[in-house]
Length: 287
Image: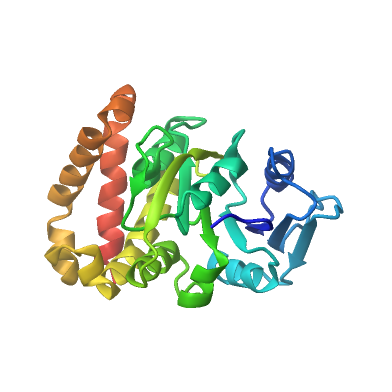
């Protein structure tokens, strides 16, 4: 599917770098007068200047990212929808690579995330959450994809509907798994890369986020048990808690083994990755 009209949809709750994110999109090669950027949420500091191809939809009150993305889908005019987080800075070539992936015949594309960070815990979060979509990883099918850097053909959304707004976390896993179940296979295209300039700078911030992620990820994995081949222990909350040291060790080992060419450069982060997986299990088991 080759698009002549692209809508970039960005949920934002007063992101301190939203102006830089929008500018990084606007200067992309191939971003033309027929394209649009839609920011949904809040910009109380007025970082965004009026621009013909920028639509700021102030939601009045804070809404979660899934709700904001659904609003963006309703307002978007494009036949190609690109979802970008308000803390993600597109790298040169990002837009043309997303379009190239769709021109190659893929309907659901996840772009790469740079395996980088500003400090130890900032880096830890990016490595633990996005190791399956590193910009250094090979292209290919994935069981699901994150929405921080995702492009979807309009016909896919028309077929499967929008995001489940009852899920503040892991709604992207649910959504792209539903796409897969409908016959639209998620495909990873590493060259459409972003730098994830998130705000999690301390151990407590990273722990808290990974724990909440585990809580909702368990719900989604139980919902799509067959498609995602959900492990048996996740069906039992207390068993997940009891086995958490073993589960965390196994997942951490697998991350480093499968992505050694990249993760081998970050051995000092290994203990922190293990802690994030313990946090995930704790979150999954506390429901």
